[in-house]
Image (cartoon, rainbow, N blue to C red; front, side):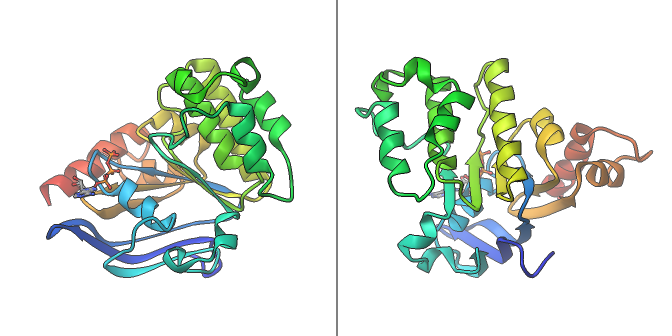
Length: 244
Ligand SMILES: Nc1ncnc2c1ncn2[C@@H]1O[C@H](COP(=O)(O)OP(=O)(O)OP(=O)(O)O)[C@@H](O)[C@H]1O
């Protein structure tokens, strides 16, 4: 854990209607790194990410994003943080080019053309968002999250449902964001995605962190002979949490 990490989750607990969803969860995401958050359905990934995005307030614990509590953050803070939600959250009647032009106008730096090129958005740039395929919408949502070169990006399953070419494009873009210093937080159910992208993985189960480290450290620490796969480590870790 580092004092100056742009994303700091500290002892965060949360309940929905009396049922625990997060239980003293603590992890960080560092600048210039991709942090992949893995965990079974219902483990608490979306809940904690929504809190870090300032959309939900924890019942206990503290969250800091770029040094401020995201729940109380001023509008200027939001311009420094990119968000890609699982359901896209895109307005249906707007055309991609118009949406990206509007978003770019909110930032000092206009990197629209690079994102359109990198994600192949040109081929559907003038089609209403509601008429786009799932994968096209996904690519547009990623461009919307990364426009303006945010310092922190929260990407919820960014490559889910994409064809193999688009997945590679998305991974390249995420690496480029990391290489320019962005703290990128990716939630995923894909071991391949985590192995290819993550500088660090945080495995959560039943609202708790059950492993946190590099892919190789998590692999080595959670297989009997120390050379298992991330997948086998994940199953060992999440099985333990389920029966705990
Ligand atoms: N708005 C809500 N009201 C009540 N319970 C909720 C609400 N949102 C989430 N939960 C519950 O909190 C727990 C954590 O849910 P969360 O969506 O954070 O999990 P997740 O790890 O993101 O799952 P998935 O992989 O399916 O997206 C689950 O038991 C879920 O049913």
